[in-house]
Image 1 (cartoon, helix red, strand yellow):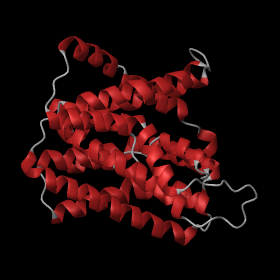
Image 2 (cartoon, one colour):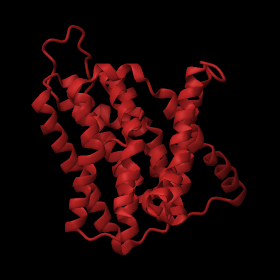
Image 3 (cartoon, rainbow, N blue to C red):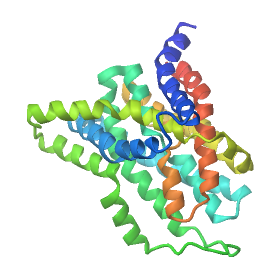
Image 4 (cartoon, rainbow, N blue to C red):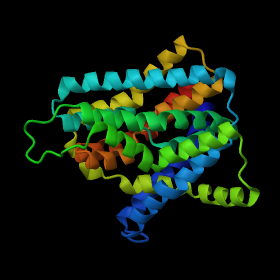
Length: 315
């Protein structure tokens, strides 16, 4: 009971911020026009700065780094293959398949970093930085490849013409602020360059705004009405992401030994609901944006229950 209360106490502020954002959006406070700009500011400025600082200043344990990266790559490969195979059992529409795929492998970084900070403090941020530096680029590339390789829907009346795969991949890397933040942070870490103290202090102030505003923006994006549109696909993506995907990770760690803290921190990220940015990508590349919005909403709501329970079992 003590462990559960401790975990619930750590996670409560995270999910309360999300719910607060949802309530503020329903009341149109401070205004309807405020939130799109706040979300863009967080995504394009605040959060990339946070990634640069966290990854750039992480003291990476070189001896165990290779095993951790290997587990992460295997996890994404196995998880991606499993969710596609399961999705094909109930769906044939490639637009819906792409949304299920994103719902199965993407993760909400705002919730993850806030949770790791609450549970493990600065020591946990080392492994959080490793996870983000490896998985943000890989997950984005995997999602775009999924859109490009799925067969066209023969029944689509207004089929979206997708650009060539290589061009899409290159643009996704060049234009994605989270990937850029990971790259800059990794470069600073590997070269051991130090950010000048006045600039570092400024960046710390900017980064401090990222998680609170990002969590509020997650709540703003929740739309309860879309939950009626998903059907079996919605529940498949949700049960896979919040239960089966963490199970795959735990099976891998049973075969490949990881440092205890690395295992726990990465487990937090693996059990996260999918990222709101999946909705943007779904709209841009012709996925089922309505299903994607439903997956994001349902996973975020159910994760408020599953995350404390799984963490209590792990801890």
